[in-house]
Length: 384
Ligand SMILES: Cc1ncc(COP(=O)(O)O)c(C=O)c1O
Image (cartoon, rainbow, N blue to C red; front, side):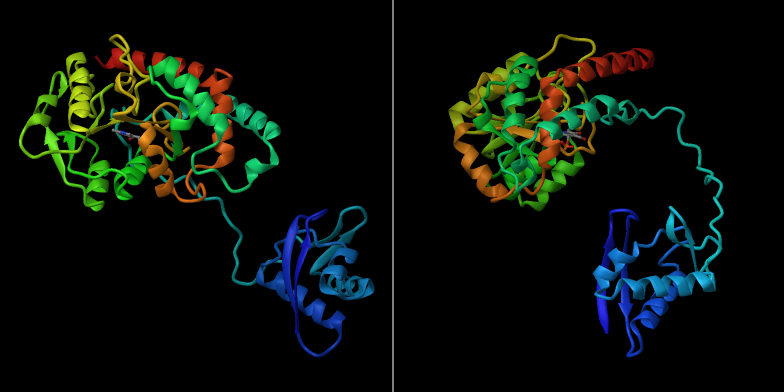
């Protein structure tokens, strides 16, 4: 039995696996294998077969053997041969039992709510397809060949450099590319920090928060202590209470889900607490760019880069499907996070990182955020 992969990419685009079995002639075996492939539907009507020479080379048979087998199937009506369009599977061949696909009518969907007021989901219909595609094209064109090899766990330098500029300008983050580790989003950052024991609990958390993040911490065996949330955000003074915690996870720009910013006095207080106790503040800046009715608040990280782990992602600004995020780390945590990440980048695609770097560099990220801010503000005003 001979087995071969027939790869005839050049002119026909089909990749065909044929088994030439039996002890009879090669021509007979090939004709039988082709007949079987058409009959079973593996070769569908209209498919262009490989040229004689290509198939002969792949199967290790003479060119005439292929020509004869094709001619036999043409004569039987399985194949058609036309000058200029090669040999194709005849249109009327249909495998038994296979019925014509009738386009179904679109399923009737149960009517959802007229307006989806769930928070935290970006408007997926507004994804900047053209600008993203253009940035991707430029990034791919300019990328060195090494960009398509195994990735650096810290992330592409192009992206870390672009983020350094953007985060300083837009969010008041104090960083340089050496402090930044690219990840796939906030959830990934939490896994790296607590699931891999770079940081340990107990961890204070806002008493309201994203359930998914809480269960991630639970699964990592991290004990959490809830902080009361009032109109000024999390009550930082509770950190000094009984039950010593080593860190605090906050959403200072917009408390999730209540939406209010952390009071300036509390921002200063949490940094003072971290300095005094050697604690770490994990800042979830999930949508810091979006503000509608008040002055923008910068990142808490700007108050002390050595005590705050700042985490952001494109999940709210661009799309949660991209899975691209960044951690800005106190210098002493960089090596531990990289060790937790492993030798190779296994989370964030290198080409995607290059595209985001280019998107940021070209100002397309800023333009998109500005546009979305206006759109969301109009919706908010309408709702209010
Ligand atoms: C509170 C909060 N933090 C962070 C995120 C972003 O998560 P990720 O970057 O893993 O997509 C979300 C998204 O739903 C969120 O609600």
